[in-house]
Each structure stands twice: as C-alpha cells, then as structure tokens.
Length: 184
Image (cartoon, rainbow, N blue to C red):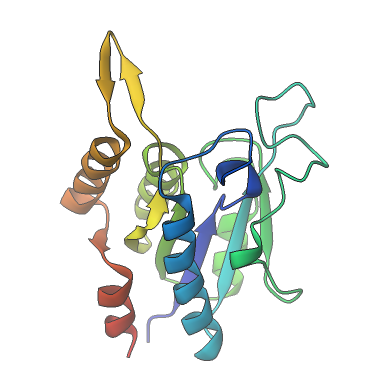
C-alpha cells in the first residue's frame, strides 16, 4: 500500500508582508497549505517541513536566527514533525529529506510552499527523479514576478509556466481541494 507525506517548503516569515522578500499571493498559498496540513494531521499522515536558511548573516533574506527565517505561524510545525534545514534550492541537496521519507516508508509526496519557480520546482523534479509519485497543490504555492533580458514576467505567469511544466511530466498539479478529495 502506498503512503503519502505532505512536504511544506519555505513558508517562512520573510516571504510574507513585512518580510525581506515578499512574494505575491503568499497569504493565500499559506491558507491552502494550512488546510492541507490540518487534513494530513487529522488523518495521521506524515508531514515534513522544509526551512531554508542561508549560512551567513549577509544574506538578502532567511538570515540565521532572524524572525524572517522562522516558519510562518499559519503552518507552524509540531514537535513530532520533522524539520529539514536546507542551504540550497533543492530540498534534497545536502539534507536528510530522503532519509526522513524513507524512514516514514513514503512513496508519494504532496508538495506546497514557495517559491514556485525555484524551490517548489527543484524539490518536485528531484523527488520525481528519486522515484516518488509527486503531486503539487498549485494554489498552495507562491512566487514573484521576474525580469529577464528586458522582459518583465508577472508572478501569475511565472507560477503558471512552472506549474504547467511540472504537470507535463513530473507531478499531478491540482488544487488543494482536488488533491484532498483524492486522499479520501
């Protein structure tokens, strides 16, 4: 029988209003992530929190020992839930995330968090490459607008492009409600 875990990535204070690197739609994404978290806890399914922390204090955000590096209160971890501290974009790189999932006997992961175009993309592709069956709750993810070579790309377009790419070959990308209905 397959076992699923929820992975909440980088929903930390610096990404919320008042933080050092505010994303578009973070509060809405966190509300959906909190719904997922509540459902997983109610069903006694495993939850893994991932928290990004830069290794030095001269970082632009997620500075060690700052308020901004802390997990947002809406998705605060419980003492029994594992927390993976990462220093890279990919949550598997130089961390114990795979070992935690293996110990939990997980073969499916439901991913949410931030940023859609960076850490969500990286962890989903890596999880798929490691053999996990992946799902991404698109409405429980947030990002920001980008600029490249004189072209400004709105956050909604960045998000849509990355979700479409992941949905093509790496994950079942669906809404929180759709993914929760599949758990029942």
